[in-house]
Length: 261
Image (cartoon, rainbow, N blue to C red; front, side, top):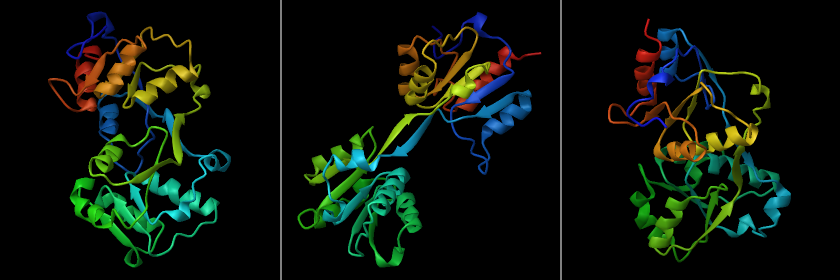
């Protein structure tokens, strides 16, 4: 198997097409656009995973009444979206007195999509929940906390709450699942780029008989790398590595050899 430092020599073949296992950012200028232009490479975007709401039938199995909670802890925009979506589906209107604890200012600002910001009590840390620990401690004995999560859980948040003895109900309200990639069955790319171990799980769920052959694999992050290795994939490009923290730069370093004219 290739190491983080350099792919095996016989793996340096020209790359003319790349599939990035993420949604096309479109409005955001991605460095992948410049990479594709510079090397004249066909670059496609396709999310290998998707986030979906828990069906009401499945949700009701938990026998949890959302109206019982006076304080909601949000750790992601997805949590915000699916919490309010579920409230809408169940025809629940949370009172103005509900308190919201957000792990960052970005998530707190995102709440404006669903509530009148100035009429609600919203607490947030600039970068992490530790920033608002005093507010948690102030209300820990008077409020009932709810933490909306996915099937992957929110271990860091749960650990933080447990450490500070803040009683909170963790409730799965959405889940991350593999996307349907059946339309890609007979489409081949020279390189696949993964940013999340679930993307690799999705690859094999969609194509159990997947054979890598000459397809190059680029991975970002240690968890993604470990999942690729667990599935016996040859890793040709990995980031971060001793030379760069950028997956785009790592791919370009590979192209400097594989596509050298």
